[in-house]
Image 1 (tube, rainbow, N blue to C red):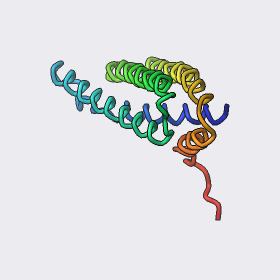
Image 2: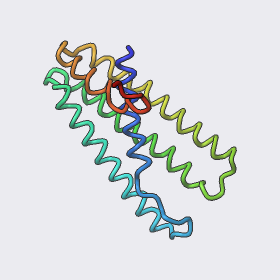
Image 3: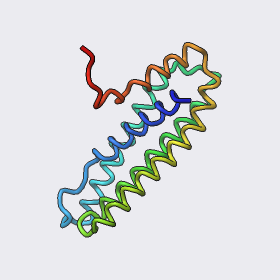
Image 4: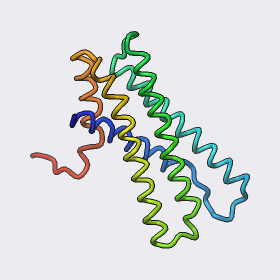
Length: 158
């Protein structure tokens, strides 16, 4: 179960990084059309990054033909979760210029809640797939997700 948690956290860390790196309007005084264009561009970048991540995982996990329907469910959850997180981040960013400290804290709490809910959704979808995987596939999943981004802050052994 710890491995699945690590898988899910690393997947969402990746999604959060993609969503936060999306092109944001440079100034709150930009026109609505320019802001909409920047958001659409950011959404397209996020969508492309999510699709790339899904494709890479498909190869890494060596998804079989028999697992395709369950993989599709996992991939669909990943897509929906990325969109939910992106919407929460967009809502925070839309109010950035007028937000009080309390508003800012509440918006971060909302993002964290969306993230937590998304991890739960993905855990359910991925656990079914993980249960169907061969030992080799499980080892690949464990390796693919366990180490991604989890070495930050650790002191290197000498």
